[in-house]
Length: 121
Image (cartoon, rainbow, N blue to C red; front, side):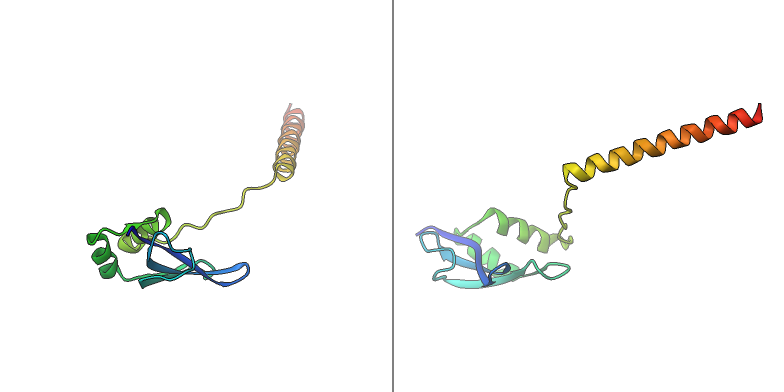
């Protein structure tokens, strides 16, 4: 039996809430599990991570394999580092508009510099 430590999704549509569970790898994601060892709520600010590290160490010593996401969450809990928030990238249209505005501002500054230079001469 391949035992995994992974996230089981709960909550409503578009409102995820996860439980960190120890489960048989053959079971469905949200199916039967052996033990719940933590919780993860990505919707709170800052994100809430509550994992029992003693239970994690116990299960890992028994051979349980944590998933990549759970490994990352465990590392965050162990170090006490805050969860990094992803920032949205501006769209191509917004980037083009910002570049045009910067270019116009540069041209305006150059024109003002020429005007002040002409006045001083």
